[in-house]
Length: 92
Image 1 (tube, rainbow, N blue to C red):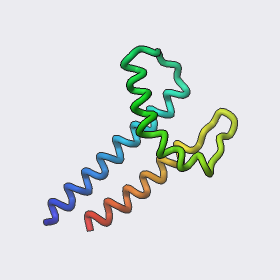
Image 2: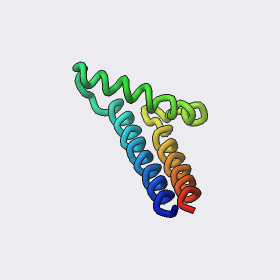
Image 3: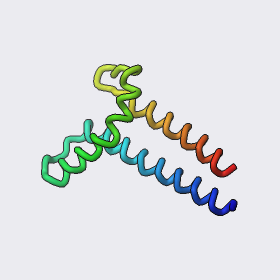
Image 4: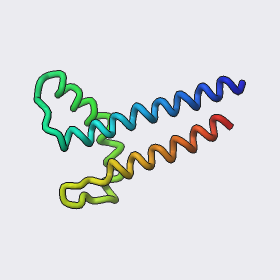
């Protein structure tokens, strides 16, 4: 039984890592100019559809300071904290 719980906790950690990379890629696409080819636009749409709604939760309370948008950083911290809590609960 313990093996299954540890496996599920590891899976939650892996999902957190994937979503962290997606948030970082979403943030970098606004800073680094990249092309507008079809695969790049598909990736941008995917990130907009998956990451933007999550970050909008934090943008309601944290306004950008000039060109600096802190909602991604706060969103990452919140994601990591919630993930650690959930992994702790699952692992027991």
